Image (cartoon, rainbow, N blue to C red; front, side):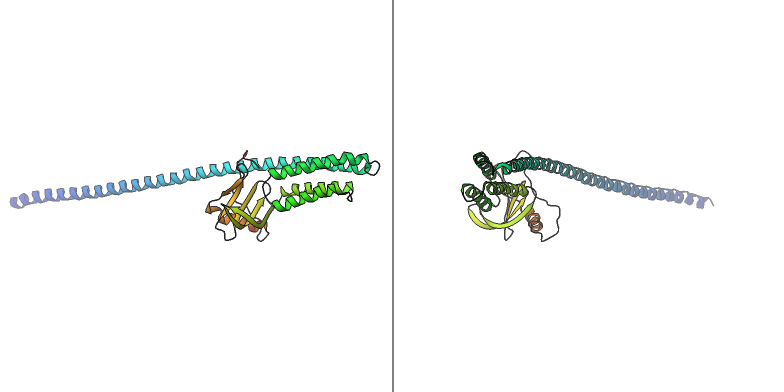
Length: 260
């Protein structure tokens, strides 16, 4: 009996040591798992924060662009209202002159300088405006000037033609239009599609879609657009031609104060 008891004691010690080692190994494995999970969670949190920061920056950029567009629209509205007031004043003057035009020849001498001033102002306005439909607008202005010089055209008809030319120019500020024409781009004459967005933007795109640009009113020259605007500009041209339903146009606009 004593011999057996002597052997039992070492066996119990060995078992206790073995169990302790197993528990330590299991605990160490659990700690490693916890540390690994913690590191994975921290990486995920960092990535999430980066995405949140990027979205916040994008939202601020969009807000800035939206405010700039609003300011541009407000300026355009004010400009159109001014033209409307000028046009109404011209209509009022025409009405008053038409009432007395048949009563005295002196009216002819009064209205002629007025029409000359109006055509001169219109010519200056066109020269400072975006260079769209240049030939058409030049021909219309020449037609009005020729009519003023003709003796077989009544004063009332001359004034009506002057007023009509003003009305056509006023409508350009309210519409979008696409047309095809020739333009010299980087020293090369190309047939391109033009897009006019009111009086705030004038663009071109080559017929094969490889070249696009917009008119820089401040620099008085065409500026090439990145390839990212190729599809938006093509879609906007389709909208202007009424080939597709109207949609939101994504086009670069001049910054406030950069000119018309």
